[in-house]
Image (tube, rainbow, N blue to C red; front, side, top):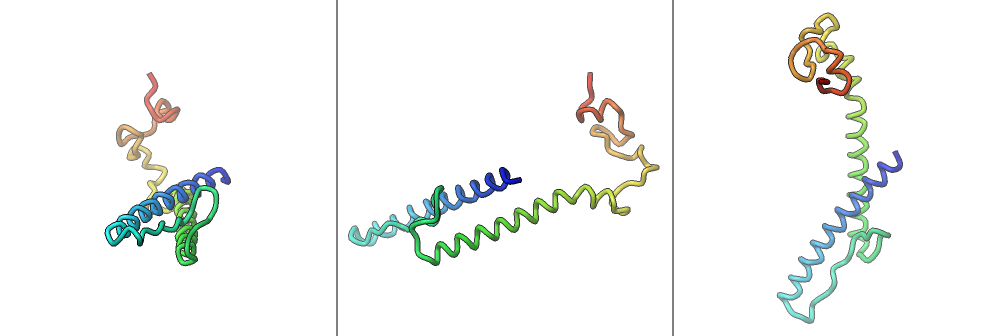
Length: 124
């Protein structure tokens, strides 16, 4: 679980780095078009090592986005974990046990064969 959280946080930091680099390039182009004396480096929201270089508003926005993404990922993870139980326990969604011949076995609407259950493919 901890490893997965690190991978997600690394992905979000990578995304924020890419966005901040895009903002950096955009603000530099604007300052070049106005005057060379107005060239100001764009603030960095996040780096891979720490939160640095930025006005408090950008830092607050980055943290808000971070927590929002974290909450949505957690909700999505819980959804996928609970989905099999929800489907199997819902009489309107799951087939009744006496209608095994009407199930999808990976190839056709028929009963599951032992060969199909081993690895999901027909063994030869």
